[in-house]
Image (cartoon, rainbow, N blue to C red; front, side):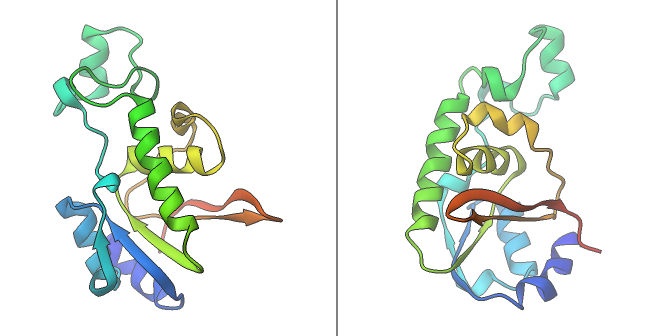
Length: 156
């Protein structure tokens, strides 16, 4: 499993806080990466609430709603990009209060919004950060300015 490949990389780091979504996929990834014992569940790390679009593919949704884009339109009965951005802001604020490295285990669409908000952009800018499953992503600083150190790094 891809998550198991993260273990030797993460073992070289010290994390002052490990946060995971309560959803099974993220918790299992956290466990397999070797950080499960230190993990705290944070509901703000839940995947985007897709509301009426839960279980539908983007193609299926665009057949009904031409031009629909999650990061622009959100989901009826679910969350807007701004609501997901608010959750991302809370996660970021919690991480920034720590003195040291923080590990997050969550879901693709949410993590793309976290990256956008980390840099100070609107949640919808997350559409520009493609993200594969089980990749390593490092948000950091350059001379005190929020920056992305690594993004979508496949672990071999």
